[in-house]
Length: 406
Image (cartoon, rainbow, N blue to C red; front, top):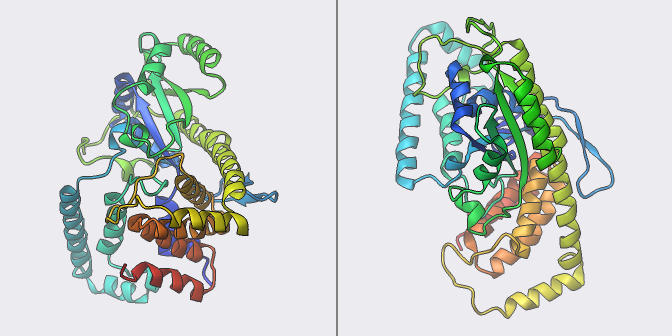
């Protein structure tokens, strides 16, 4: 039996359903990174996926399990918003057209490639347009308020050692009116984990000033502070046999060979930064959040008496509007808390805990006529069955429920 995580769907879920980190940075941070033809996020992105992180995780159970695969998704605050529908449709068309043209050119090139295609496994011969379409489709429906996967788990606040009054810059970055509407509209809890990062460009001089700023940061913000030194190569002629950023560069960045001031020491610093952020900050924060929410849900919703109480309370509600969007839930409502609990458990690979909470909230959404949220939970139940390798009968029931006309 194939491990669900090793299937094409499983790999996509591990990539796309992972914790989001919102990035706030100053212009001088971007300026230092652009010396290498990379944005700040592009510089970090190759080091955000861990195939063997091997971290012990304890969620609702007293028995820990080991998390092997993990990843973070980084987004600037300006990108944490739902895409325009018409723009998204045009983007999907472009993705399919470009990928299909590539498929045709490869199949028509010569016969040996066709023979190789025939001999490949079934999951390897899917047309590339289909894989690109799936990935792009996920992005077109991202950052919705009805699910917590795309709600930032943490915020990485980044300031350059060249910035004037860097401590004030850290404070100002988060206290801005440009934060995503998810944080300001009540859809998610704005009290998220904050991690403060000071970036020092080694071409700007010695490290003493940056070290002094880091000490001041820790006395102001606590232990969630780090220093990242980059651009350690003074001449910019460092050549890397395996250039890790090829897949992450934007189309609008220069295509000609770029100078690279990032040497092996910088590589290791970036890698250590992302591993430390994941293992010592994001994962423990999510574990604690799951345990707190699970205790709250167990006290108010689980058990026969609580279920009966909730059922009678919902039957008495008369203010639910029967519309496609359904009622609105704030982040501190019981329904939102249960959905967050399920989504956090899914991202930490505790699929049984995720499934139990999706089941619990499914009835609430149905009674409230919150059809979009109900459909979303049914979808996640099917995916949780799949990833936990539950029986195909249970899995198919969830998918059938999703397709039943309301």
